[in-house]
Structures are given as C-alpha cells and as structure tokens.
Length: 351
Image (spheres, one colour):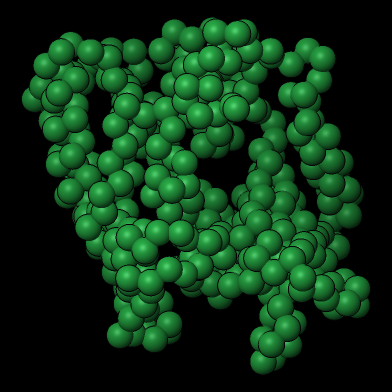
C-alpha cells in the first residue's frame, strides 16, 4: 500500500519502496485487485509489499547518518510493517485470522525493538536533543472485538485509538501526558510549527499540539471520524445468509466530551458502480449509534434510542462539523503565490 505507484513518493528526496516480504502471498507474482478493492498495476507490489522492521531501521540509520555528516536538517518518515497481517497462501482465511491474533503482541514487540534501535542511534550520534520524534499509527486493530478481526470496517475504539508519543528533549517536557481529544490530522501542523512555519497563512484542518504540550491550550471540542472501506465489495455488508448480495456502506460520526455518535448509511460500491440494491435492502443498513465511552468503553450498549436528547445534540454537532468541510474553497481561503505554485508543480501536486 506504500508503493510509489500510489504517488506517496511525491515531495521526498529519497523514497525507498524496495520491498523484500510478500504482502499477499496468494496473489504473489500476479496482477490483481487489492483486498481494499483498489486496482494494483504492478506485479512487484503484490509479490513484495513489505520490509521487515529490522530492514526499515537499517535503512533509516544509514539515511540519518548521511544527513548528520553534512550537518543538514532532515525530515524522515519511517513506516514499520510488523503488526500488519500477511495472508499465507497455504492457510485458509480462518487460519490466517487465528495466526494474526495469536502473534499480534509478538509482532508489536518486534516493531518496538526496531524503533528502539533508531532512537539509540540518535542518542549515539548526538542528535537526540534537537530532533523531534513522533511515534504514531495509522489505525488500531480489532482482535475479535465486535466479532471482527482487522481494521477499516468499523469506527469503534479498538480501530480508532492509536499511540501518539513525542520526544524532543530540548523543547518538550519529559513524561507529560496530554489528556486532549487529538488525531493524526494534528501531526502535520505540529511538525510545521516546530519547524518555525507560520500556520496563520496556511489554514489546515488539524491543530498544532505544541500549545497543549507546553501549556494547557485547547485543541478541539469535536473530532470527525469516517471510513469508506465497507463501500468496497470485499468489506461490504452481506444482505443474506449466503452473502450473495452485498450492500456498500459508509460510516461516519463525531467524538466529543466522552460521547461517540455514529451513522451507518448505504453507499454505492466504489469497485462495483453498476451494482445497485433495492431501496428496501438499502434501508435495512441505515443505523444510528450512541455510546458513553466513560461508562461503556467497550461500546457494547447503543444508547441512541435510550438517550434521544443526547443523540439529537450530537447529530447537530456532526452536522456542524460536516458543514465546515468545504470552507477551504471560500473567498478567504489561502491562495498560493506564483512561487508556491511553481514549487507544487515541481512536486507534482498541480498541473
């Protein structure tokens, strides 16, 4: 999923996607659709789609050492694959699931060891005090909660909650825990502010977290969440016992003040645009959910019917969040200069 064919290499001086471990063993060496329903146009991205965590750390330390030799500033993004599941072609799906659940903690510890190697390298190279390190994950993982193993289909806490740890000895307090509602969307503005960029001229949906870390600055009241993965055929909802009929759905909602409000509604399948279900079938998959996370952290009691006033309040908060989604195209939106446009054009972001 990180192959340069998806365009993720844009803007980087070095982008290492020379993978050594198969991602989908059963598809090895063949062109195919990915499990998320996205077309993959490169056989190599199927046959080899991962690196071992040790290899990622080896490449990282070599790269950082080259920057250090020239006393040059650097931005390095490291992606560790360890906790991800690999589909083994000689195992059936249920066996692959059981193996993933049984070995998940072991794989996470292996990733932790590999990250530790990079941190020790920074220490030994004298770079630690002036280097901002951010550890985060793109998603959580369900290991049987709500009858599901994996990620992307639902918006429960086991999929949403991820580590977000920062280390910058010269400027960040050690051991401080910030009890705020934050998300991965806040990482980019945090890094930019740390680098001295004036964010007032470049509006972003995320918020820099430095004020909350250094003091007690507010971050946000609400956090919008969504997933469109169930709008792909492989992850769509079965409409009958044989799963011969599937309904694509999208899930979205809002978090705030210890409550989570979720909407599930039918959505056309991205990879089967010609597939249309009847209105009667589609209506069966519209659902509202409301959870009080403090009293019910496992999200086992849907209170949407029992707490109509709270549900109505959060439906309004969700509507307000969605209403701001297109504000960036308004008359007061940031307009890049000719110089900015030329830089973006060189990076491939504009035509």
